[in-house]
Image (tube, rainbow, N blue to C red; front, top):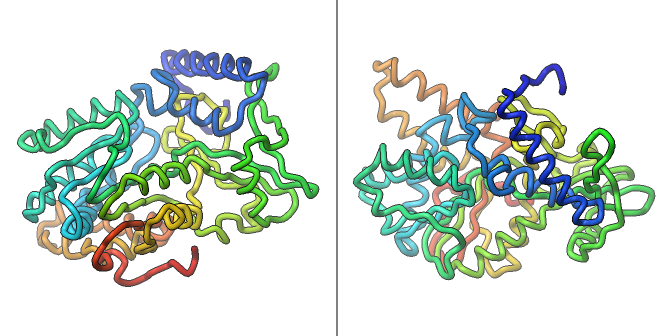
Length: 384
């Protein structure tokens, strides 16, 4: 184990060992090799064992990373205002994908109530039973009178009209690793060796993956990610969305920057106890595994599925356009105990050196009558 990373507790180490054995058996069942997308899927979502399926704390200071909703209530309150605008042009329903701790849902509902714009329903699609229980407990504690408005789904609804929210969902979808080298294209997958998991490359057998890889031009000896799962998710959402818009918020780039010559080892990253590193085989089940989002691919998938690209910008522009500064001004600067922390949180959410530039917001929709306030200035669609 790298000396720079803290050692797990004996209980956590045993949990990881159980997941390692689970994945090892899956590799054996598939002839000694699985795609990295399969490995990532099991490491994150294997029932009762994967990172998001088990009970360890993931969000906030006590977890492995901090998301924008955990950082500040200003994020959810601002997002609520954009969501209210979407609902004014469609129906009064919200669908959130992967709601994490539930804090975003709670902050949005509280703000929407203040605005007199509560939805008729707030649906949460959550694959983790552990996280679902935490979300229910948080909303029951903070907004008990709104519990009847919130319900949890096991799958996407057949039809939907309203606002769809996905904050840091796309980066956690399994990705395929592709290696362009010597005029050939191979897929980098996972096998089992004497010391545990090892990388092993094979010819690409998935036709959709091969076609996607052949369209990408990169220098020789270049490794990066292709997320077929994101394409599938966008297509599924597009089929179900009748009217309204989806807001997808995550860290990533347009395609030209995503496959930049200097990014020759890809964007794969792991998060463990607020430390970032690049070894996805380290303590499976105890760390998050992510990849940056190719927003050009997201936009193209949405358009191909019949949606309109409404806007694309960075998080700073989106939050400022949506009124985050006005929310800060609701607190008097003379109230230092409240104002100073909120001011610092706003800085982290919008600063180019923090989350403001790396995180992007893309909006895709159907039958929307007007543009959205979050994209009124600072549009970056030219970079897609």
